[in-house]
Structure formats: structure tokens, C-alpha cells
Image (tube, rainbow, N blue to C red):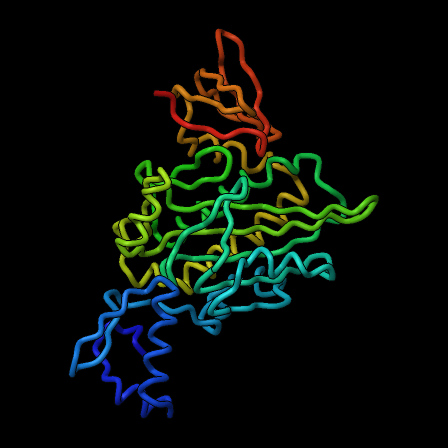
Length: 321
């Protein structure tokens, strides 16, 4: 009811919800817990400092491309979960050629790469996961996060967002700032199928308080509302459908052909190509010049005239000083 950003009196809210004014206040406290800034004006009521574009399950499903709609087994749109990846990691009965999708307005324990937290307030971003079953573990499985990055970049292009870049191994950038990230978690059975849960986080419209919290972690962030695209094209439900569509398409292609169909496009969007970088490998820091990736998704860095290879998941990367 407050999503429109307009003022609503406590009395009107209580009457519409058939609850007491005290219960309305408790719900307002829950909104604050979700990171929403609620303004309470004495004698006038409550309003959100920023309107919220709520996810709509019917709109998401209706906007899915045909392939994704055919392959989708179950779609869940939740108010709050600990982690969309965690929800889908519990499923072990995904049929071949089908997938589930979980979206949430708020993650209380959202995760990024290497155990980092994913920060965001209710409705400020896109938090979604899909699961996928590979009948046999693909030979280039380490490159899957990079292929997913290409898929998300394609989806954003479908929505009119141009100029996004990819930073090895799992970040999407807009104007050099972090727009989103990918977290792929695997469960591989001996002599059996491999299950991948692909988590995607995108910043859509970040309140200033959230931006400050993220900047305090040393990350400069961007959001889709800065991309210069009409708000209608960037409705969160429509962006979610575009991302789900491209994920389905790309996971199927990766299953059949590996990373090869994605390598050239990833290289074209490589934010670090030919730039000086510092690679942290355990306790050792090594500096060189980024020279792209190989077909397995490994980062290539020229160090003292020789090219060294770094595998995703074992290093962190920062621009050299």
C-alpha cells in the first residue's frame, strides 16, 4: 500500500487491513528492518521516501520468452528469504531440461562470491536464482560463471541497457562501477548428474543509505536507474523475465557446447583487458597486465614477460595501484 510513495494515514491503513493502529506501527517497523526508509508525519500518516516497484509473479511469467516458459517447472516470488540460492539448493529432483526459479524482494543472508554478503534493501534490486541439471558435468564447468555474466549482459541489452562490462570472474559493471554479480553453486554426484544453482544480484534503484553501506565495504556501486533508459523498460518484473529467459537459453547452450559460444562476447566486454592488475593468490600478491581469458574461463595475466593462468574461485582481483 505504501509502494506508491504517497502518504497514507495510519487510520486508513488500519481500516483497509482490518487491524489496529498499533499493528500498523509494527508492520512499519518490519519495513524498516527490510531497509526501507519510512517517513512518519504526525497527523498525516506514513510514506516511503522512495516508491517501490514490487515484483509481480504474473507479470514475470507473462513476459518470459517461449523457451523459458516451456522449461520452467516452478516460479516462486517471495517477500523475504535468507538466500534465493539456498531455497533452490534444497531441490534434488529437477528433471532434465526443466528448471525452477526463485525471486525475492529481500534477502536476509544474501551471499556473494567467497562468502561475502550481498547488501540491499527491500525491492531495491533483483535477487533471483535458477537451478539446472547437467546430465554429465561439462568439461568447462569452471567457465560457467563467465557464461552467466554474458547471459545477464544480453538480458540487460534486451531491456535497452547498453555499455555494461564484465569483470573477471563474476561482476557486471556500469560505467566502471559494480552493477551486479553472479554466484554459481554446484552439487556434483559421483557418476551422475551435476546440479547448478545460479544466483544473480542486480542493483535496480538503491537508497542512499544502502549506497553508503556498500561504499563502506570498498565497493563503488551503480544501479539500473542510472543507465539512461525509460523506467517502463526497467520495471523489475520485466527485467527479471528477461534475465530468466537468457539464463535458460544460455544454460542449455552451455550444456551442449560449453563456453565456446560465449568466449568472444565475454572478451569484447572484458573490463580489465590490457590493464595493470594485482592478483591475490592465498597470501601472495602478484602484479601484471590482464591478457583476457582462456576457453576454461581462467584469467590470463602477463607477469614479467610470461603469461600466468589463474583459475576462478582461487583468487581475488583488484586494480593495481
